[in-house]
Image 1: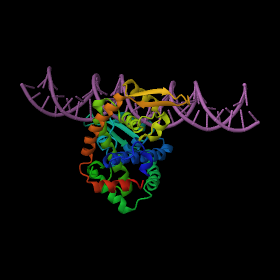
Image 2: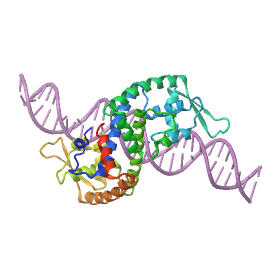
Image 3: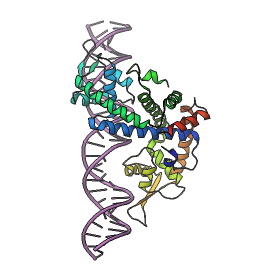
Image 4: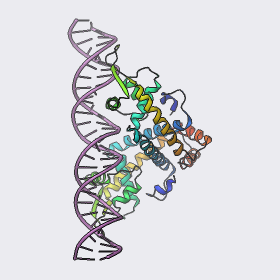
Length: 148
Length: 148
DNA sequence: CAACAACAATTGTATGTACAAATGTAGGGT
DNA sequence: ACCCTACATTTGTACATACAATTGTTGTTG
């Protein structure tokens, strides 16, 4: 992606704003690919993230606030997000018996199955997005991103 | 930003998905800062982008489809975006006399003034976001981002 | 044990975004 | 001149997100 072709608003953009814009552009492109990849499964990127977090729990239920903390894109409305996964049968939800304020959410077997398929699809997508990167590039990029 | 602290969903995340998530996290952080910075001016990041593009036109009017092309985050709804800027008095809009399909949009003096203030505020924000980067880092980061 | 603050989740509302359909305009071919 | 296609914008609708207010629950303190 040649950022010069996209940033045409000024002749010379200083390095800092240029970097900021560049990241936004890259992020948008990634999002587009991810959304398109997940479209056949009829789940959003956010919903996918929730499923992935739930699988990471390895059977242990997660409550909403843990989900919120671990979500890549923070969102205020985890309730409605889980609602949609519930409708699709990918998660179960019940009130935590030890603390009835909390809600326990676990991923269902069906959820695990579709998640596996999504993983495969996303693997391909990631390779496509990162086709110009070798491992050294990726390490370097991650090191730089850690500076944020 | 230590991505390990945020990504707790799995013990070992392979390099590629890790990179993708990392970019999303960085982008979110940038967005939060940008939105907070622009909040006192009561404009969204998108609206700011439109104003910046219009200034880049140096007096020449821009029509909607040019705006759309140059917008960092593509959005389908430039009409309503311009509507809001119009209400605030930051832009003028009129039908293009030579081609009545087109709409010409120019930034007003008031728009230019507030834009200058926003620039100053965003300059500071950018420096804060990128405080851990020296010029060499930024060059390197941009080079890597160009690989996308 | 009653009052209160703190917590976890839900609901309401306003705003933002994506996608598709509709409106109005221009130009080309017959 | 008429029909058709392509273009530029607008409108409609469904969905996503941000922020604030509300509900229900827990534990603490007087």
